[in-house]
Image 1 (spheres, rainbow, N blue to C red):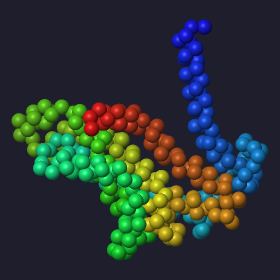
Image 2 (image 1 turned 90 degrees about the vertical axis):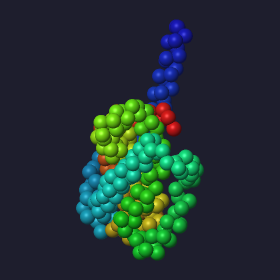
Image 3 (image 1 turned 30 degrees about the vertical axis):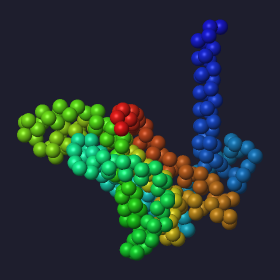
Image 4 (image 1 turned 120 degrees about the vertical axis):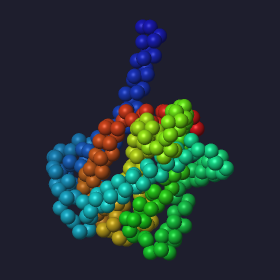
Length: 279
């Protein structure tokens, strides 16, 4: 057998093995969400009976676990955060890429240093600030927290704007276009990949966040997001009989993100690779 054939065989074998490890937990969660037998732990993977009762339980309007309410809360926070964060990030990146002003480089250095610290380090300070203005346990507080730090994630978008030739700006300025017109009518139409990438990341962050949402929402069950709500089902008393409903909820919350990734995959890859060309 040729050396190249053996190498390809081993490479594909390794990829299939890694893919199986990655896909197995997902298949297991999906199968468990349809399992008709009760119990959190069972000595087999494929269910003996299949049922939709666990999905019906989530949509039956249980007052202790209002899944639909949690889903709507998460969707509202994610959509508004996505719009605000995308606007802030793209605007910040364009300004730092195209405009020259006195504190530009120090601002970029400070921003780079700040992004090195994990966000949860500011968790307690953020909580007391929100409590001081009576904003805790509200969806507005979550939107404010998620959107406020969005502008610090401008580096990839700035790298993308750096790849757009400045001669386009200069030609437009000769024709009498203002900086705002250059941004909205020339740069933005050319920046669809990075806008999609930024929007996708901004949408996913609140959709999957648990730590900040838990600290800010406290015990206000009606205002929970989906991540906190599902976690609250796994108490010592409920874990055994609600585990299948918990996995059904996991499957449901994965659907929007999966569809978004499938639909926007082309722009996502193009945005992140183009933005990494220049820092």
